[in-house]
Amino acid sequence: MLLPVFLSLTPSEGDIPLSPTDGGLILLLLLIVLALAGYWISGYLQRRRLQREGRLTQAIVFKKWIDTDSDGDSSHYVAYAFHADVPGKGVELIARTELSMELYQQASVGGTLMVRYLPDDPKYCFVEAPAASPAAHN
Image 1: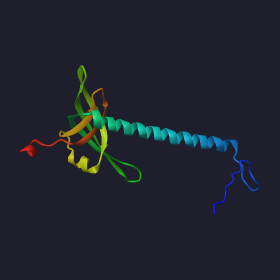
Image 2: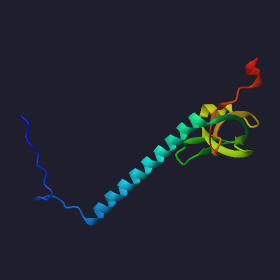
Image 3: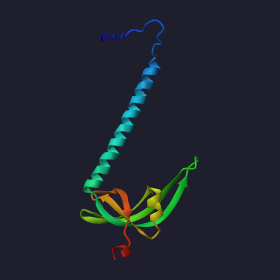
Image 4: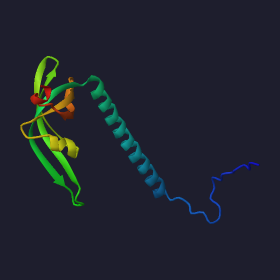
C-alpha cells in the first residue's frame, strides 16, 4: 500500500532554518555548475565541428617539454607550426598542446604531426597523430 508523502514548507520543531547566506551559497554553486556545463558543451561542440569541417595538414614540431606538478604528475607538451589555408589567404600558425605520453614519445623536434584545424578560424586546431614518415609508404 502506498502512503502519501506530505512536504511541509514551514519548518517544524528541531529543523534548522536556512539563513540568507545559505540561499546565496546555493545560488553561487548552481551558477558554477551551469558555467562548467556550458564550458563543457561548448568544447564538445567545437570538437564535433573540428571533426566535421576541419582540414588536415602537416605541422612541424619545434619544441618538446614535460611539466611536472607538485604531486609528481607529468604533462607532455609540444609546440608546432603549420600553414592553414584560410579563405582568401594562407596563414602560418604556431600552437602548443598537451599530448598523451604515447604521442609525445612518437613526436620529435623537426618531425611532423598531422593537425586538424578550422579553415575559418584556424586557432581551433588539434593534433590527430604523428605524420607517417616517407619510408612507411614504401
